[in-house]
Length: 326
Image (cartoon, rainbow, N blue to C red; front, side, top):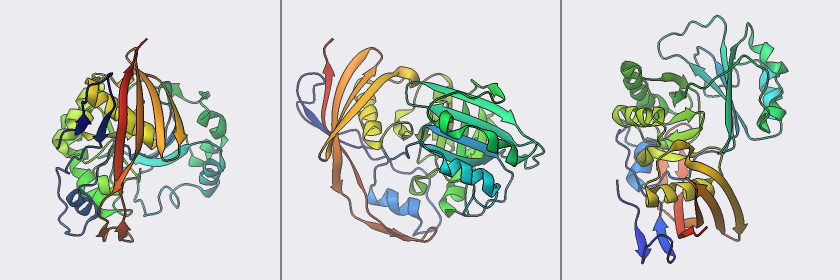
């Protein structure tokens, strides 16, 4: 892993500095030479600030097998259509236990966060159709429903959706196995959560933070730190509740200040002017202003995962990172 390069005087709180999103090589290597994860890592594509933006997560237990289209084609159409029709940033994911594929009453976990506030609910149903009565739009707006029970225990899900992208199964399953052996947390396998070329991918709730390019050791380290209220910055891809520009800004502040507490983020606002995004953040009662813009395009690469194709990519450039006086 290269350190975050800073140019100019690089003194936080005095003058502007320019930082480029750091690159973390994938500790696992696919056996397939043209795999998306292998090509992305070889190309030097950074993963910081590339998590999909979601506020409400609907996690539904399903034993599989999962086709490439899952959760579609494994859950009732009436349920999926209602969720997709609801307004708001909602993501539907199917989950399963690593070793127990026998499901009598499916578990459903609802998790919402806007980056600074959060809640989780957990319950079980007799039929998947029973979930159709949930108020998805109000939940997406942050209203906690009267469903099941409140959940505070962290939940971790690792993508192993091989029919969607072979890299997710090839690199995700060793991570699940390592975490299962460690036995330190509630870990599930899950369907597609985005960013296949950054596999192995894991999300930790309730904060809904992505950790990517993991192997067994780095995943165990990330889980242990998360359970202790800290974020492992090396493999942190982003906080899903934030825009990608804001994800990059939070990451840059954390790297510059060594703030590690998961719940350090107290407030965040952003404004866009042309290609630049100004992000004002408060972490641990300290105020920061970060100006980010897309970095220069990297060398495109081709891969043969899924439908294959060419990937065009860039990182984030942090133009200014200043601590604001009170």
